[in-house]
Image 1: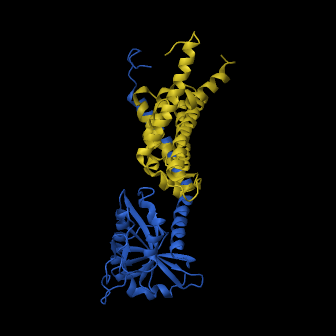
Image 2 (image 1 turned 180 degrees about the vertical axis):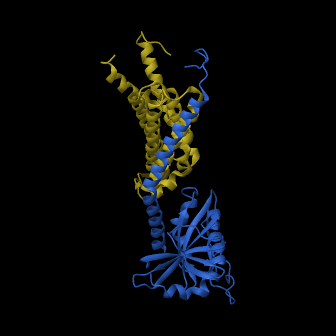
Length: 215
Length: 231
């Protein structure tokens, strides 16, 4: 078991990035995923903020897992999550007011982000701190990648920019709908389609090569 | 994992309360620590953002101070920028050039736009009794449509010298600031709306009109106070 621990940790880390990616596989946390991903910078900031809250909350929940009776665990988790959201809220205000205005109410709404409570309840409360952090970090990075995939594409199509740098020159007519709410759904749908196709291909390959079976 | 898996064993109220109390205390300490640690830089950020906007709309300005206008007159607002103002008082900022002369006055206005409240800051020049610049403090207008109010050159041309003269009694604006349909501006107190972004354009006009109507009659008679004040 000890020899396997490193491989197992890496597996925990990868779970959130690929196999159980919060945005593309579990389709969780859609509220910020659709609302703040109008630009690559916003998406990254939201991703980092969520990752910070996720990792800190999971660490604390994991440390206290033997201390917290089942009866009050939800209340405890929510208080812990709300604490770190408040901390992140203050930090973003101190770092950049512009970013704070751009993310708006969605920073506060991290409190009710289902990825975080889900991780705290389903994972951190049952695993030791190191495993919990590894898993949370993977999930956070997976979420950030998901947001970035949405935000990057939406900024390029909807504003003709990437990280605020104009890409196509003055004659480019931005595809404005992409930075409006419907654009969020279009881009998310396109990504989900892409991932579904990849998964389908993999399944077909497994079943035709024999041995594997389609789940 | 399921609470019913084991024989039910009641956790004592004392232990539940102890856990909740402990978690709350710990979280309280973390929050207060973060608040204390970031307060200064957050306040500095806010002040800087405000200054940057004011210096952009009053280009000659090098320093600024916050003032309040009440029915009794005007007085400097003590404390930091962005602080609370008393009831009935209107906040404005006096901007001074490098030599200490009054470069202009910046005032905040707000009105409901298409998505949410549009908060603007406009520059007022007592010399021409006109508005000679605007900046947006906060808005959530549609990207590419409503947010043209900060990029559309034809729209911004409205605020090179927007007439906000007071009437003879100095009680209200001689002519209300009005937003008119794109291309039909005839008078200096009218704002030519952006075609396709009429609602947001109107919000800007209403914000300016409401704020100017309330503030200027109190401010203009006392303008000498501002000129004498070296900042």
